[in-house]
Image 1 (tube, rainbow, N blue to C red):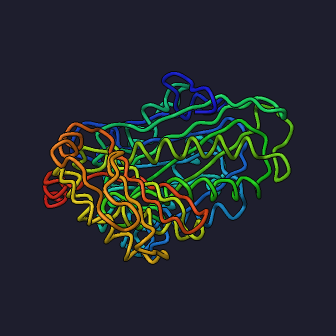
Image 2: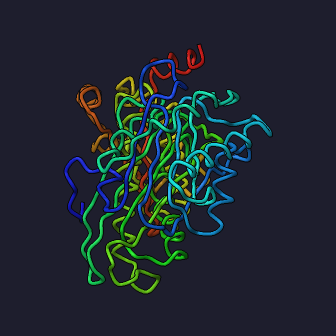
Length: 400
């Protein structure tokens, strides 16, 4: 990383942010399922949302609230997506915002709402109404928030960085959740990012979109996307740095890219049933668009994912995925490396020790796949995980 990490950092490592979480009764297990993230100061805000045409009520409401480019708090629940519920879903999302606003003493238009969990299941609003007064906001509450967002995740995903630029010092931090229903153009992932940087609202939105594009939009667990995805970024300006905008925002963009990439890789590593992180790098494409398309196709290919799970050096599946990706490919120029071993050179197989490669795959926590198209300067990296029997078990029993 180019920027120093804050040990045990989380979204409330940023000055001026508080969070808290409780078990409100959405989940059957006694674990946190309702949380609030709050800034003591007004924030400029940005958001990126699912491209799924079926959108949850919280997504629709938050999109509307973000048109003003300001927000002060985020309320999130897990265990219920509040999606595909028509007018009732919209009413419940609005009440979530209203209950949060009443607790914090701010307008409901300054609240962003996020929900994740089972689609088509109504929120237990009577239990939530009782729960809101019990949420205690604390400076170290970001860790509780990260856990309250989790569904099938096995671990929270959190990061905080210290950033020093000629415009001044500021802190940047994020939390995310996601383990299944993950595919490029966002998926069942929620991500909340905070900063105390003073920053232009238009630049903040563009910067977030760019960072999401090279991180969460290069992430695939299972080829599915959901109605619930959102990434929110709140900036409260407490660092009192020289204002960051389009003409001086390079360091902020780089730091934001590191935060989002770290969280995206954490999600890939924690994919449902995953035993290995897969990192696909494509170089030499005719342009970046082709490189992105090829990398995302490989990392999302079920046959590639199952081969990695079985420690099977079946590199032909990688070549086939490249060929169907839509990227320009010339077979006679194609090179492929699997777990740092060259298996194909200029479109032809290279002799390698199959037992050695199989053994290295069996013991690897991270499997790199490198593809060289040798046609241009386009380059991209995508992340995913293997596809296991445990993934099938988790998703065949999800509501039972």
